Amino acid sequence: MAAAEGGSRLRQGRVWLRDFWSRWTGTRTFVVTAAFIFLMLSVTGALHPSAAFVSFLLLAGIAVARAIAVGETAPIRIQSRHDESTRSAFGTAPTLAILNRLPDPLFVLDGTGRVMLGNEAAEPLIGKSAVGRHVATVLRVAPLIAAIESVMQDGTARSVEYAVPVPVERYFNAFVAPIAAEGVGEPSLYLVLLHDLTDAKRVETMRVDFVAFASHELKTPLASLSGFVDTLRGHAKDDPEAREKFLGIMADQAGRMRRLIEDLLSLSRIELREHVRPSDTIDLLGVVSDVTDGLTPVAQQYGVEIAVTAPANLPRIRGDREELAQVVQNLADNALRYGRSGKRVEIALAPDEKAGRPMVRLSVRDFGPGIAKEHLPRLTERFYRVDAAASRAKGGTGLGLAIVKHIVNRHQGTLQIESEIGQGSVFTVLFPVAG
Ligand code: ADP
Image (cartoon, rainbow, N blue to C red; front, side, top):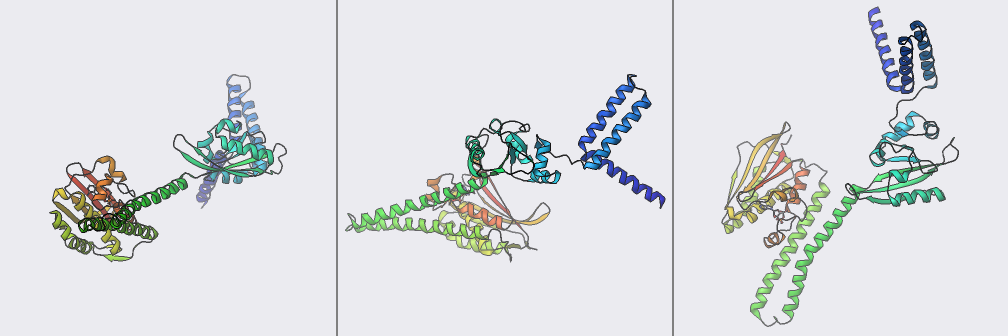
């Protein structure tokens, strides 16, 4: 019992000491410095060792007592110059620690534009030794400096957006506001809060590009259709042979527009549902068989043999049948269209695993011309094509693999593309097993 009490007291003592050591940095520095000075005094004989020891104990005791009385604060990694005024302006440790925890960069300037304080998130932007320096020397961003000057002049808070071109282009929104700080007289304080807009801008650019690409893809067949309508109304009006030929081309162009619209609609439907996990239990072999049955006439037309292999008792996967059929269809369709010179397409299903999780592997292999390495990482981007003209000539929309990627994401699967020039390509998808 007594031993247990002694143990717990020892533990408490250790905790107090650790707490003291980590929190009371000021006192810690003082005590260690005092110990060093008194040690030197006694070693050099300037002070008798016992006198040095007693004096040290006295000083250290006073320092600790003071620390306990004033509740010395935890070390704050916030950069802060006028510690006392900063603390009276923003409260004590907890407030400063909260500012430090904010994910957005934040710093405070005094009335002359010098940095008084910056949180951890601001460090990569303003540097480690920004405190005490004028903001214009730590952040050379003209629109931001101009906004700060305006706020200092008229006392009205404002926001400004700006871009930092190097090393990687980044966009920020800066909110600059005067702070009416209690206990701090003139000069006043100014808060600068930055918000990184880079990701939002990237999404916006992608959206704009997507609309531009989609309308361009639609505009070309539309222009061709209107051209032929004019031709049929004009000089081809009484030429049955030309009329037949032009009507054939118009049907192709209309088909191209239809495929593009269907793919665009699929993509937006899949994106809408991407965060909802599919709930059905699917036999992937059944899906593959249905799709390959449908592709047989095209395969025969191209002189390509489609071989499907799968083990007995292949586990079922959790999925959406229609979407899974679209994955198989798009991959097999590409293998037929781009790899038809290889004369063979192999679709294989097999059990697999990823990070200890049971999966079903679907691979679609062709023996066609293959794809150069530099294109592989970009193939799933919307409208990315190795050869746009060849893709269009083969009825491609440039959206097939983007659709595959989104469906695979929704199914929490993975997509891998391997290819060797002259050897062909393998598209492999892993789907988690149901249950
Ligand atoms: P598309 O409608 O153009 O086929 P996809 O998104 O399905 O669009 O494919 C993107 C591009 O990837 C294609 O334009 C083609 O250049 C390339 N590609 C896809 N599958 C294959 C394949 N099996 N062999 C060679 N290239 C392929």
